[in-house]
Each structure stands twice: as C-alpha cells, then as structure tokens.
Image (cartoon, rainbow, N blue to C red; front, side, top):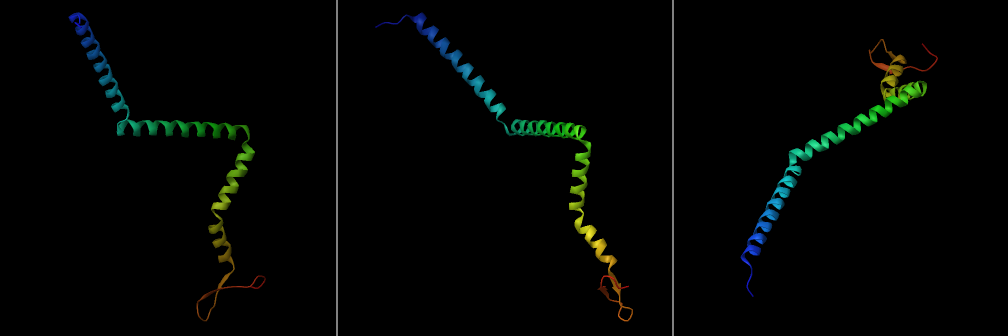
Length: 110
C-alpha cells in the first residue's frame, strides 16, 4: 500500500493547522480563566447588580414616596432604639445628695 506523498503532506498541513487552532483556543481559555480576569469579571457583575438594585429602589421611591419615608423612619427608629432608651432612662435617674450615686427614681415622684 503506497501513499501519495501529496496526501501525506496535505494531512500534515491539516494537522499543523488544527494544532495551531487548538493552541490558540487554549491560550484564549487560559487568558479568560486567569485570576485577574476572573476577579475583574466578578467586580463588573457585582457593580451591574448593585446598579440594577439601586435603579429599582429609586424607581420604587419615586412611585411611592410616603411608603418609602415610613419604611425609612421605622428602620431608623429600630436601629436607634438603644440610644433612645438610654436617653429616656437618664430622665428618670436622680442623684442621692448624700452619696452622689445615681439611682432610678419612681415614676410620679420628683
């Protein structure tokens, strides 16, 4: 079985071309999967997500400003409840003139 040398040369050329395409594709895959590119893609995706949420939130506030103000006020009061409680409890504290120590007074007494 003798092979035509032109067919062998053509096959070798096709093999070389296929190998070059394969290595080119591998290079592209390695570039895409590099840690720097993966981190950049993650940051871009997160930024797009935050922008979308912010845009939707702004649209919701524009469409229902009173509801948004009520929610914001409720969240503010919940977050400040400890501070508000401290202020209210200090209103009921008195100092004993003899010792100078603070103690909580009874409601209704001065």
